[in-house]
Image (cartoon, rainbow, N blue to C red; front, side, top):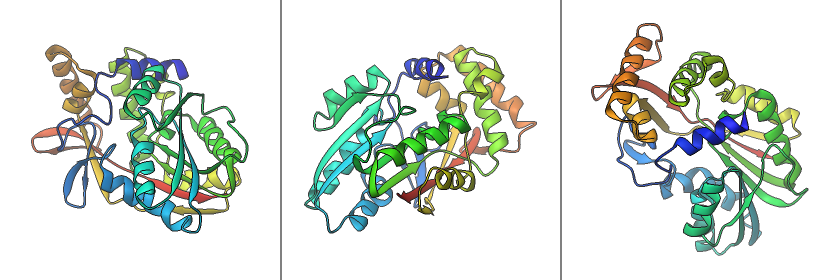
Length: 283
């Protein structure tokens, strides 16, 4: 499965944190408190759901080690580190990722973030970090892989450490998993069943159960006031599809709309909505 995900990322032509067009139907956009934002890089969004919680929990500690499980180009750690340092914290930030291109980009854009090649389904350093964050990575694992990721976070956290986990989901997880796999299969030119194995969009309830089984004590599901919308245009933008490929994908979306009630239309674009589950857990 890791090789499929790596191929998927290599096909990507636009990095998540780029300043792409913002609005319904764009890959990196969500509606947040009445405005469309880039939810990968928006500083206010990151502060609300990551930095603020860290400040509140560690207000009596001024030196922190933060590790990002699957941090991509490092934008999340860079922003958290910057915001924490503005609040008089001293921060060591470590980005663990398997993708060489992501790590190369991280080193170039954010040299203050330590970029390290690592498979997050392997145990990292024991009792090492005050905080572990992981954003939009969980859905790329099957259920056993998700449990392994969560166990590894618990393993690497110090006692009373904080794990902040954010991913993409939908209230109808089964249909959402199916449609994401179908579209991924088209983009990757792989069979539906194989594509289905590359991702699993779990509910907050099932993820809280995994966290409890991994040894976390205080587990809190945090409501994220944001909704996203993915259209064929968003997928075409993300993977730089040509006009022929983009039109074929739009036809597939139309055919899906006849049998899948997740499909809806916003600003004349056919697509499906998603929400953002988020859990804060303490070791």
